[in-house]
Length: 122
Image 1 (cartoon, rainbow, N blue to C red):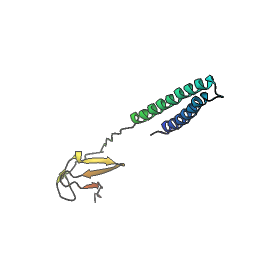
Image 2 (tube, rainbow, N blue to C red; image 1 turned 90 degrees about the horizontal axis):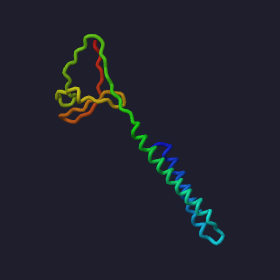
Image 3 (cartoon, rainbow, N blue to C red; image 1 turned 45 degrees about the vertical axis):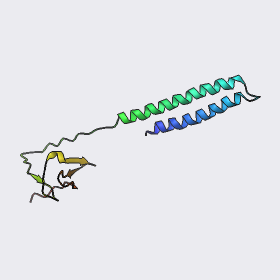
Image 4 (cartoon, rainbow, N blue to C red; image 1 turned 90 degrees about the vertical axis):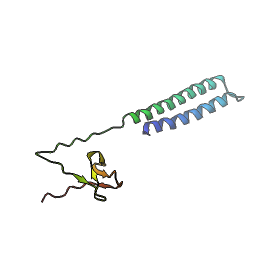
C-alpha cells in the first residue's frame, strides 16, 4: 500500500470522528444547527478522503513494472545441451528464470532449483 493512501485513510478517520462529534454536539442543549451542517460537510470530506485513498492504492497496483531481459551474445556462440546437475535430465530455455538478477534453473523432472554459474573456458 502506498504512503499516500495510508495518510489519506488516517486523515479520513480523524475527520469522520470529529464530524461525528459535531453532529452529536448539535443535539445537546447548547448546540446549534450550524454544528449539524459542519458535521455533515466533514463526513462528506472524510468519505472523499477514503475514496481518494482507494484510488491511490489501485493506481499503485497499476504501475507495477514488468521487465524483459534480452541477451545479445557477441560472436559465434553455440549453446550446448544443458543437463540437470541433480538428475541429469535435459533442460530447455523455458526452465531458466531470472530471480533477483541471477539466472535460476528449475528442473521439470526432479524439481531441483539452483543458480546457473558460468564455468571458466580454460
